[in-house]
Image (cartoon, rainbow, N blue to C red):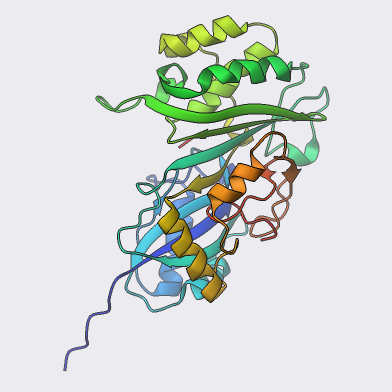
Length: 325
């Protein structure tokens, strides 16, 4: 008697990783990537090969505290058990932070409404030994107020071709128009943080923006000049890309019905942090005004320096107490 085929299930996992040792998230021939590490670990605990889809395909050296991935499996292992089992097979610089079973059709990338990135600069004459893998060391004193004011020219629906990396041009025919909802700078002593939220990002876009805004902070560009660069849609007009190691993918938001489903599933199985609060709720408090105070990530990526993770990041981002660029 033949065995009844198992029904396919859609699983979502939260992921945190230090990108230093990896050539980005997505699988590449003969390169070590986060996706390769994760799929190998999942194969070991599910006894089947699965292909994961990520909310954001981060580039080489870029970190994540709020990455979300989805995959389809016929395995019976509960989401919270997958979290524990996968972490047993993963290297110490990659952690699964939560898991939830989702409705069929939910996709980490295609279902996303907006993504959140943070870039950190160590703005001091002397480099910080402990933050060197997480922050870009810029010894010249930067004018963060000028950088913050100029960042206002990014907000809105615009063509951001000026900030797409030269080596990462968008495929022929694909639009370079994106909607940026928030772009702000904040100083906490020598640490400068740039928080940016958009519906999606071009490859290298955040790094191109930061590299150009640093020129504003150095006094080499004025606000009008920066605005002209944004409008030019010409990569040759903008500054160099900021180094990848200062960038962290901190969160992603989804429609309310998916958020509510994941929150309920996580509470039932204790496989996912954040309770019933959605990322939208938490981010509205976290990223509003100057409430985005730096904190440590305390689940899945111990040792993340202060300034990387906004306080209160929950649900689809980083759990408090618990994108490609």
